[in-house]
Length: 264
Image (cartoon, rainbow, N blue to C red; front, side):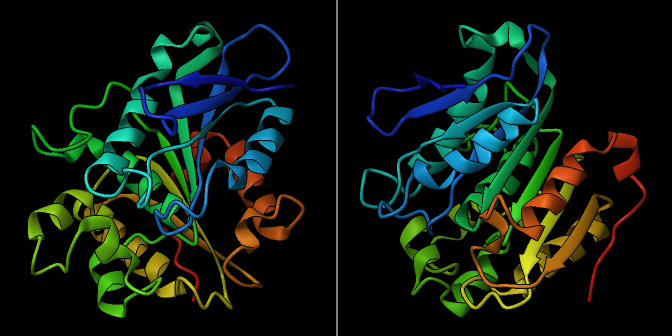
C-alpha cells in the first residue's frame, strides 16, 4: 500500500500522506504527528513506520508533515498547520473512505503535544490558531508527549525547545502558552492514552502524569501506561509500547470509558 501525498497548503512542508487499507468501506482514521521538539531537524520519516503499520491493520492512516522551527514554523504556524491538515480530511479525494466520525490522533514527543492540542481545539477562543475545528478528534494517543508546556519550559526540556517554539518564556508570552498548552484546553471529551518509557530522560514521565491528573480533575478519560525503555521506545513498531497502542486502538470506545488509570 503506497501512500497518496496530498498538499494542504502552499509551503513544501504542508502535506500529508494518506494510506488506505484494503477494501471499499469507510475506515477508522488515525492521524500520526511526528515529534522532534518542533524543530526542522526531524520530519515525517518518524511517522511513516507507524502509519504503515496502522494501514496494514485496517485503519486509514494519515502521516502529517508541518512547518517546524527553522522552516517557517513555530508560533503560530505549526499549530495552524496541524489544524489545517485535520480540517482538510473531508475534502480529500478519497474522503468517502474515511470514517470522520472516528478520528484518533497519535503523536510522539512534540507530536504528543500537537495531538493533545488537536484534541482540545474545540475549547480554543474565537480567533486563536486552530479554533473552530472542522474535524473533531475522538481519541488521542500521547507517546512520551510534551503535554504540560509551562512545566516543560521551566525544566528547559530540549534545551529550551518550548521557548523556541512559542517565542519566549511563559511570563513573556502568556497568551501563546494559554492557547498552545494542552493542560489549559481540558476537558476535551476525547478518550486519551498516554504511553511513556520509564527510563525516558528526554521527556520525563512526569509530563504524562501531570496531564493525566489535570484531565482527571476536569472529568476526562485518561489512561497512563508505562513501558520499559527510553524516549523513542513508543515509536518502535516491533516493541511492547506500540503493541499497547494497537491493543488500545482496537478496543471499543465504550471499553475505554471506565475511568482514569494512573500508573505509579
